[in-house]
Structure formats: structure tokens, C-alpha cells
Length: 135
Image 1: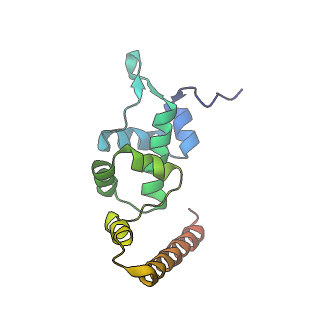
Image 2: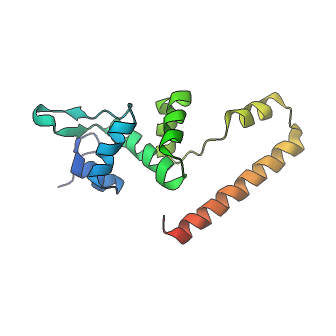
């Protein structure tokens, strides 16, 4: 019988759900201060649903989007847990300067459309490369 969506997960269940080895989850705990599963007596880890969502975001940034550990640490420092949760749901972040230029109207409509088109082309190329690499 499968657990409900709000049930806590053991490290083995979390690892299976995220398709990463258990030791990777333990390693991420040492590198990312925002990953803090509950620990029971004896040190046994239990992951809450929000922990799984954050881990899914970290996995997506590292494995799918090509971020480094330092890059994910910087994203968290600059943008907080919301960015990790956005990554879990598949939201691809644009650099803040890009958004500011568009919002301020400095690029103009033609420049905005050209940049968005280039971004779409890059995302499509990355998706093709990921597919070829089996990611």
C-alpha cells in the first residue's frame, strides 16, 4: 500500500522517489543548510512533503539544469527556498537583470521578442541534449 501525499518518507523512500542514491541525500545535507529532515532517536531521517519538494528542486537544478553545488548555494542565498520550489515544479529562472530590463522597457518590444526567442531556442536545444544524454 502506497503512502499518502502528506506522509513522511524515510531516506530510502525519498531516495527512490527522487531517483538518487541515499548517500547523495546525506551528502546534500552537508552542502545545503536548508535541507533539514526531521531526525528521530538514533538519527533516523524522516522527510516531510516540503522537504521532498525542496530536494526535487535541488535535484532538478543539479542534474537537469546543470548547476554546480556552489551555484545552487548562491541561488538559495539570493532567492531563497522559493527558487528551489520553483525548480521542483519545472520553472526555469531568468536572470534578474533580464527581468528588470524587460520591465523597465529598456529593450523595447523588438529586443524583448528577440531575447525571448533566443531563450526559447536555448531551452529547446538543452531539452534535445538532455534527451540525447538520457537525462
